[in-house]
Amino acid sequence: EIKGLVFDLDGVITDTAERHYLAWKRIADRLGIAIDREWNERLKGISRTESLELILAEKPDCLLDAEEKEQLLKEKNAHYLELIAEITAADILPGISDLLEEAKSGGYRMAIASASKNAPLILERLGLSTVFDAVVDPETLTYNKPHPEIFERAAQALGLETQACIGFEDSLAGIEGIKRAGMPAVAIGIPVFAEWLPDIEVAATKDLKLEEIVRKVT
Ligand code: B16
Ligand code: MG
Image (tube, rainbow, N blue to C red; front, side):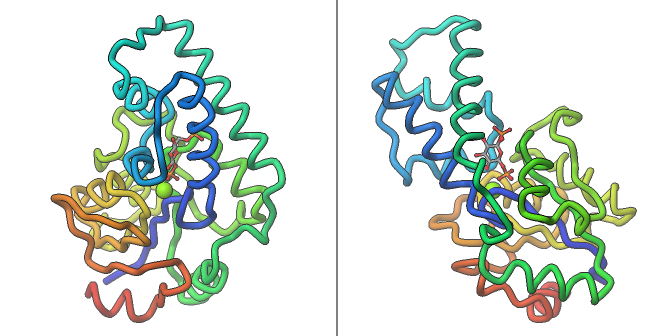
């Protein structure tokens, strides 16, 4: 029986995925590395440090020392913080507020499993801080997505088995993590699929129908 819902944040609850992309794009442009939105799919759900490594791997002759990398990570986050400064409840993606409300009144326990260190700040700006029963702190994790750890920890924080939770993700890495954690997975707006397939696919958050999703995975 499904008792819990575990949500990714960026790209599921709000469209910060685009802002992450814009912030990275500025860094990449400066390094003379070409990235576009399609290439950016691989950065979704990936930690800040690993994202920079993936970008740098596009230009093998671009060798930076630890300090220079640290500087770029700081700049990326500073720009990202500028881009999210204006976020309000109006930036909650279509359909999500209704879904969360329906889930609350249906008695589902809810958690956030986001790789973002900025997640608590974003939730506060969106006015959603009190909606979730748990927010996994990514700084306490040993592994990043696609490892299942973050999803296992989210279920644990809700006091539930992973099988009793449904995971919602907009990234390939996240879908893999959810499936490896033993949770049914709902994929939102992901263009291509690799090895790990979701149980349910929707084009956008507005297409999420809670009752139908729970029925399909049970
Ligand atoms: P930060 P999610 C992830 O959030 C983003 O998808 C990814 O693009 C970003 O690099 C990562 O968070 C780290 O974010 O730099 O704010 O710590 O999709 O797992 O909610
Ligand atoms: Mg995401």
